[in-house]
Length: 345
Image (tube, rainbow, N blue to C red; front, side, top):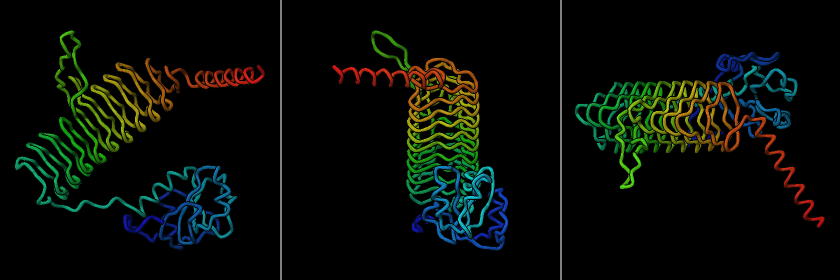
């Protein structure tokens, strides 16, 4: 059960209501009017809780669970313990996400401006927006309705923010246009100077960064991630993209919709990502590349060449996934063979 000091459940909900939320069907024998008060993992759930099974690895835990209800794939429904109500769907994890959101919706902003915030008189603040203590809102800023600007966040001059957007504590925004329903987590830096300079024996000469950052609707930007503004072209973060913590996105990068960038990854300047590209943790992309739509890049991969749409790559330098796995296997076999010969000697 989530700690009530930090989370407040919105239930109870009937099983019929939960099935509708999850897009699931009730299994035979389930009571549509039965009420459930919370969500919980399989191993700790009780009769009043809803849980889920999405991974066959946990079938044993599922069989022993005391959860009153469970969201489960049709192929595994027969493994349920007696008395457990089942919400059956081919996408149990998605169903659980929707049910958990129903029990624990994001709290609405508390409209108003803290007396300890600094808001320029020329800023436009939308109805129902909350601005916390220590926040700084610059000249000519436009913030939409029902936004939350957390304590000590800084929204620089003439930045625009759409409706229902959250800017976390100590985040800073400059030279950017941010869409609606965007979540920017604490400490993120959006619109800072791109890393651009001319090489010269007398010293490095900064190149003015004259572009912006465009963050489209429904994007999440993780804690302490940084997105540089463009040098001339804009840096663009496509609609619905998910950016994890500690990610670096360089100037002029253009990401299509639905991309996923996992923690500690870095994208060098002017690289273009098609829609729904996935970078696993600590992947690194060189500059001026084109990564095709739907490409998947393994953790710690170093990408130095263009990647075609739908390709899966891994390794340093990155190669097609099957080739990389063969390389790893061959290296492992070689080292085992060498070790055996040394022992024999």
